[in-house]
Length: 204
Image (cartoon, rainbow, N blue to C red; front, side, top):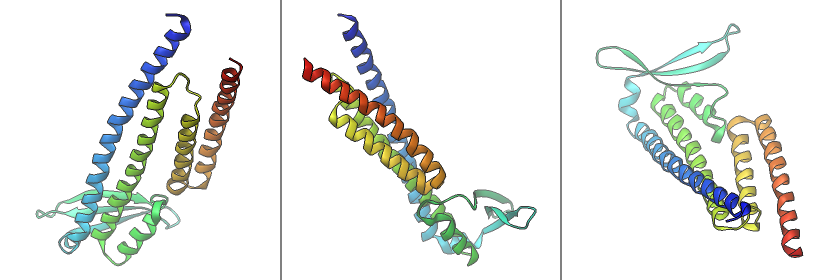
């Protein structure tokens, strides 16, 4: 086995390990996302009971602006336990902050709590979907003789676009622009490698 074949075998082995790790993370995220969504729905369904023992504590800065909402539940002994907290900058995805503020304003605490859980579950589910695409990319690389293939480049491009869009909805425009710029640079480098590989194959 020559040096090229040894390096190729190591790359395939690394891709197999990365694919298995991505698969484990994907399964964990699917389980967590399912739990969060089901829990969120449960809070909404049982809103009558839950709202009777839930309260909201609001933290404000020196200017009197609300910076944090802390959802609390009071048990049968009168003890207050913190359940969930979110700031004004959280929940950009699917308008979570707006919905939670709306429900809190009407003292619909269970609904607000349910929306927070469901939103977090949706975020994790999206990440789980991204891991599925990443798994397929590693499998393609593992089964091919070169990491610079048409299918691989297409899937990588899809992953980069999805992550950038997700970053925009969850973190905002600034983070999305930075993420997109980084991924675009990486994609251009890989695309250049693909062109060189294609020219080399045609020459041979």
